[in-house]
Length: 192
Image (cartoon, rainbow, N blue to C red; front, side):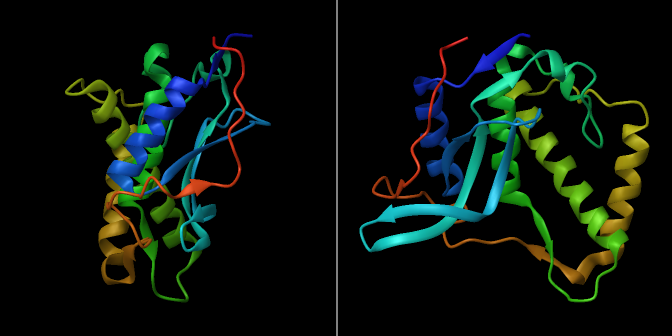
């Protein structure tokens, strides 16, 4: 099994970027499956000068199984097209995309298909954001049927219109103070 490991230098870079760009910190989790990262909008506990606070956090896997990535797709694009040496940067940028751009259903009583459309849209936009951040102007590597799927999701989102808003947190897009430290410290593996 080929693994890519988080290391202290990579972590420090991602944490500084996340704090500056999205107003969140980065933490590391031990994956029990092939999950590479997630945006925890419910938050983690931070130690602040004013006391403990619950605040959103970007979670990155301590290791990524490169063999499991083969054939991996998102709703719209082929994630396995990301070069392996840029994979952590892509996962990081994808989660920052969620922190900055996720939509939320703000009206009660929305049906399951509306929730599905919002989830699909958030994943598509996070993938697009990450691809542009890591690959620049390279064309998106659409999966088979990806463009048609994206168009159908965009139509569904347009119909939902006024029932949607953005997920928010107090520092969205504002720098997170360096004095805010996560209580749970990351554990690193040997560099790969």
